[in-house]
Amino acid sequence: MIDKLRIEGGHIGYGIRPSARNQGYGTKILELALKKVSEIGIKKVLVTCDKQNIHSARIILKNGGKFDSEIEYNNKIVQRYWIEL
Image 1 (cartoon, rainbow, N blue to C red):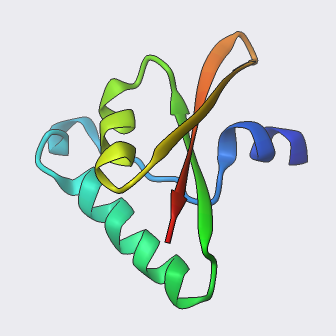
Image 2 (cartoon, rainbow, N blue to C red):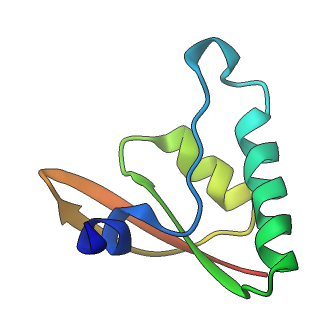
């Protein structure tokens, strides 16, 4: 479980139900989560998404994510992004 979290879990996770997608909720959720993380003193967070999830990658990039790497894990490609607060 620890390896899974280090590879594809990151510090923050979020999900948007299909009927609420493309309305800015993901961007806002991540923005608010980053604010809370900053308040508790964390300076750098890892956020990941499946390579095929271009919408999640856009959300991460809109919130300052910097692409780090891609890792193959459980027969899928996971993209890793770091956000400095």
